[in-house]
Image (cartoon, rainbow, N blue to C red):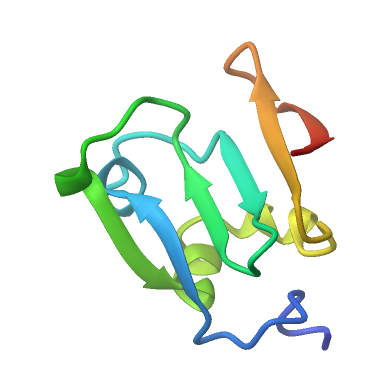
Length: 93
């Protein structure tokens, strides 16, 4: 991890997100570092397959720099914003 990029994964690591995040319609309310190593950054709503997007970890960081706070999530951990606010709770799947 370096000071410019907080994640231990490379900036070009593919991440799952939704069109609501990439289009700036909703904020990130769910962050997951899956057991298989993938990252998810979602708005907390239900999604159809058509709404799924794959972007780089660097792109997610550009969209919302606050996700750097979750760079240390271990495999199998996730964080959810509670009550639609920035009160985040970290849990293990």
